[in-house]
Amino acid sequence: MIGIKAKITKEGDLWLISIPAIDAVTQAHTRDELFPMLEDYIKEASEIEGIEFDYRDNGAHDVDVFLSPEKKIIPWLLGEFRENADVTLEEAAKRLNVKGKNAYKRYQDGESVPSISKFSELLEVTGKRLMIG
Image (cartoon, rainbow, N blue to C red; front, side, top):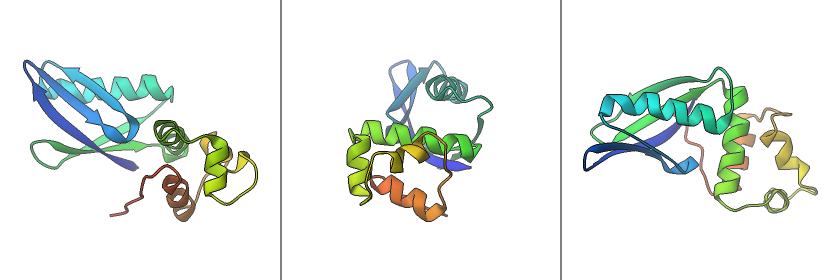
């Protein structure tokens, strides 16, 4: 599973959950409703069938959101991270020190599955870091 950090806050009568890494925010009337709302949001945004979710609540405001299957999640995340960082495919290739935009695009389109070290390198192109723990 791939894990990303989420923050839970309460604003007035609404509970919010945000995942800054993918620029995602959704809301609900109760804290318990947040997770189904987030799942709906990610399913719709990613257009991926069969996403599985798991959560680790780290306290009042911090939650780790785990997504699988990795083979489908990684390409979507690479695209989200790149677009949110305003990095073009050409710029991504340049940052990877390779010719042609297809180097990054192959992974983003799911044509190739990156190793852990390659995934880390691809994330660094967008200013993100891979943490394994």
